[in-house]
Length: 416
Length: 96
Image 1 (cartoon, each protein chain N blue to C red):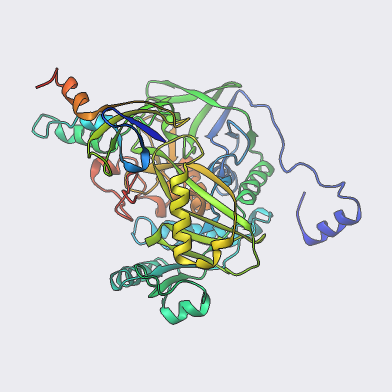
Image 2 (image 1 turned 30 degrees about the horizontal axis):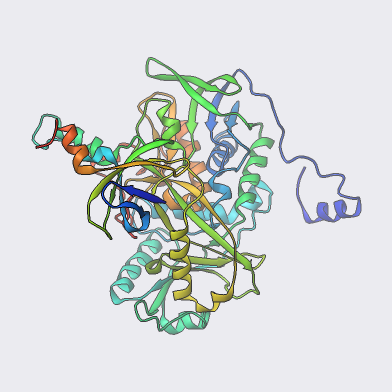
């Protein structure tokens, strides 16, 4: 089944009887060449790229719930490549380029919308830092523009420019950044992978790894043992508890990060605005709801829900930046579990166990990385060599002192 | 979340700041053999359990004591709190 405008019209005229399931529901086979643990965005993107780019066969994705039931469905849908460090920025720019072509490639509408992201500047020091960041982005082939206050005012005249503590002095704009339909990304990769012969197995929780002589032989699951030549784990949020089953401790703490959506409002925010100083960022969905969030709650959690003080903190940040939203009502709030790595950067690497690979530690930023994470993890699984842009995401970088401290903070940012 | 402070009774978790796993009380000896490995373990690696977790909270907006709070990371239920000082002294083999 191929999606096209013609097909949509044809189905509309024939009572939508031709739409089938987007993917099969196969029974697990006894063994596979590649088993991907975790049917979220990263796991599905990994399976898709393994089959499509690296020509791998006999691939299964094991998901304990339903496809896309983790953080791919619980984020604030922002895609961007405005990082600073050489270990990060080329990777995220690679991801941005994949976003730009993904819908044509997997023939599914992920509603990628390059509406721009604006990071607000409040001080001279921050302007210097953002100028440096903007230049670093350009070195990696990304786009960036440093805006002065009047340019920001022309874009968003209703922002509170005269806030006593954080007056707006300008901004760093990446026009190619934007948003995407988060579930659509998972579904698009799932359908794409399924069409290439990948078995997507839902309601199949991995309960253990079978490891002999330092080599993984397969995984124990709630639907029986499944053998595998290589096992890739992409379960950000639960990486700690899954890898504990393989006897590993990780440089990761699991924390809850909340996000919010308001009632639907008339369109007034074209892009994404971040107010880092106030722990607040916002965009407006196509349905009109303001989609916004802030920082992690700040304590270890696997609960997928946060507490009220952080909701208050985020709402205060929103009111400080844009007093116009004061009468808007909050429609929904939810929480996702973040793999907070100790330097704030991810891990895509082999482990000490042969045949077992780890994709983890995405902190706040897993969604934007979905395509590149899948591509790089697929390349590592298929070739045992890292993708050039992901070569710094080593598991042993903490022991060797080669941390990628983009923001100089990890699981304990001490921001509250 | 309300934390049952051993001296002050139930206190709002907002009065506290959080540091993480209570194993951070057991700082390795920097002069010992294999200190680099021990510090790598101490600084970076975590058990990160889904379930009961013993963790350090600092009563910053209160009496500025450090507590070891036992909490369930799946439900956020708080199961108990002790003074971190008592925990550390007990680990060393009794009060001094």
